[in-house]
Length: 381
Ligand SMILES: Cc1ncc(COP(=O)(O)O)c(C=O)c1O
Image (tube, helix red, strand yellow):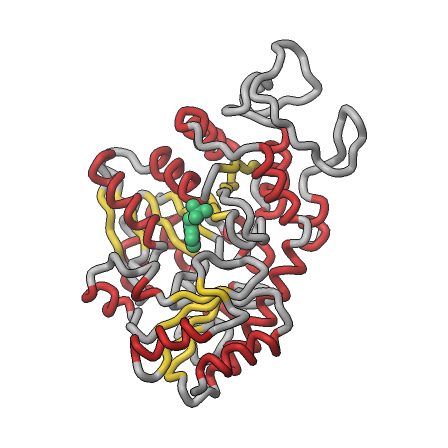
């Protein structure tokens, strides 16, 4: 099946009770004991912290899209990452992540390393440094495309390095989505997402997902059950509804982002554009080798004049909204130095290459000429 067909149909085969074509939202917290024509992970449907039919159908859908044996969903992307670290990073383990990993993931890993007794190593980009650390790791955590400089690690090489080290390789595929890239098919052990972004796609739900072999997913299910970090049935339904159009939205995000990146690259007030689809990006050849059908919807750029000029652009946008998150219908803009990365020590932020003049766009689904026109007026004057 093609990725579009999988996005539309996923794991849903119709309601066994009524034949309803669209998945019902089961709000019941508890279920009567006894035989039911439904065998979820806990093998008996009894309590919605463990299993819920709407949540389960989302999990089938995610598993199919990512090419995993099984899938699991969470109340947020961070809840998925917490379950992975609690489930797989024990005392004495060596955990490796890139320096540019999502900031809250980095904070969570640091905090858990103290409490659970594992060692956390942050390395790269440059990716040679990351691969070197991965060669002696027990758990490697990577992101398909990083934020905000859109680096793409050589995941094909990383799979081999982690495999030789006997390390578990977990990939956060939030920025690429299974439409552009499927880490499990390449040999990663687990894939996770903030489903708050492209998977749900409408900026109306916070959720997380994981997919991989059934034994790993069962272990995560055990942690989710203890932590109580399952999504509600309504939230699961919203993600399911979003998934039905994922392939169409991701293509449009990618097309629009390419138009915006090319426009910005020629703009006299822009000194640098970061987009893996541009030959000028240091990871362009890796992105071209790994990603299929586009380079994602996020574009970052540095404006000439540094921080004051970047903040001026931020205050002048009209159609584009100054707001966090990504992968949603509207185009969003942030100034990482004063928002997502403000808590990083200045030396570390500059070492990563996140300057005061950097702006990050999550390019939305509008007509591309309208996004370009808004950027043009915001950059002028
Ligand atoms: C790459 C990445 N991973 C994980 C998360 C966390 O997801 P959530 O906000 O759904 O908890 C985010 C959130 O921005 C993210 O960008």
